[in-house]
Length: 549
Image (cartoon, rainbow, N blue to C red; front, top):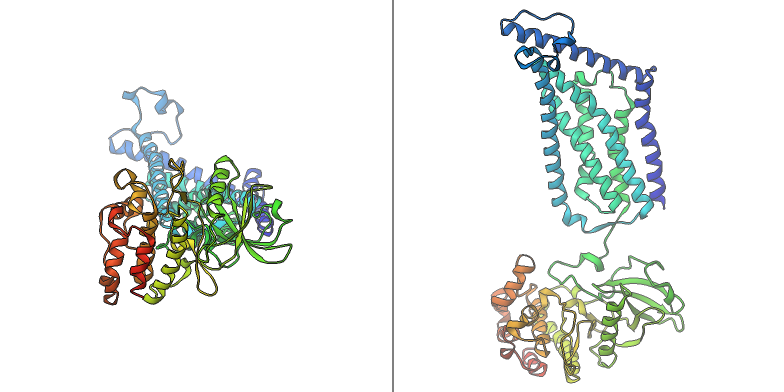
């Protein structure tokens, strides 16, 4: 709310200040308006004189009789045929065209610079979001628009001066620099105005925005360009400089860092994580927690975000116990189907290495209440000692063995879906991609976390349908990461990673750390491309793994 108030105040004064010199110029009154008018009159007189001089000079060069000192409307290009046209007029016309060429060149360079800044800043901008509300976004966008208008007004004498200078053959190089700075400032203001309306941060563009107007003002005041004679004390210049510095600052204040649960997870981890555990609370608002659940829970704090659901840490009103509450992001038929499918799988699983479900319902809104465990394995530093890695993976394998015995597979084993209890017990969560192997037919929804996916999830036509051995492959990927601190398959983008999983063999752990040689055979068997070459049961895998611990 404060951000909206500040931006509205800035908008009011910016429009007031931007309009004052223009109104004064139109009225021809004293002060800045008179100076502005005198300056424009001087520019017009200089241009007119240069037109006559150019005509006389070019006529003399062509051995023609010099023209009259006064302007003859009969001898304008439109009043003559081509054979009778006075070439003395062509020089000024070409000069005006040259000014347009300069504008187009500076426009292109400015657009290119903004494009490079926007692309280069995408990585940093993705970590922020606009949190000032729609009113603040609208007000800020209008302020940037007012700034663009002010810069546009100041650019008029610059490009008028270009035409005059080119006609007399005396174009100051400082004018070219100022032209670029002004066009860049105008385009940058428009880009940031659009970004404000769309509530899309552009950090590098914002950071660089004050520099061109400051440089422009310094050059103008330091060099005394003829284009700005009479405007040195114009308040419009002060408005441009102040707004160019103030608006990006206000813009930054209206941005907030995206929580770790939403986008700061290390790049080596999968980005799709439903439950991340004990992260710093960054959202605590009834606007995000379903109001219909407020009678059941209090003090909700968002701790996890996945592709289809949000997870809140909250306290039950009836006994004050801290629990995790998972609610789907969308309330529609597809979300309801997926949610109920997950609950039907999860509710029958009772094991110390699987997160417990306390309650669930689809009314008043779909939700599931489960035990609150703690941080996920994604928050654990890697590589970790081999004995600790074996202990963690053995617990995960025990939970999977229980699920497999009941005909269920998880199909999304990754660090973000393994929560670590206070006593160090690993617990599997998020069964949204699970499947009951006793049911016929395939699921209608295909989804997985690419970094930890098995070949059959990427290319089922070649490697077969996912089954219990898919969980073994994914568990092997997690074990590899715990031991080496890196993923076994890497590549550029989705295509590169997919090709690596389907075609390349992982580097043995011993190549990363010679002390891990004992794990080479176990990892190789877990990560075999063909399902028949892997461990055929989770128990077989655990047996070999415990022999290494």
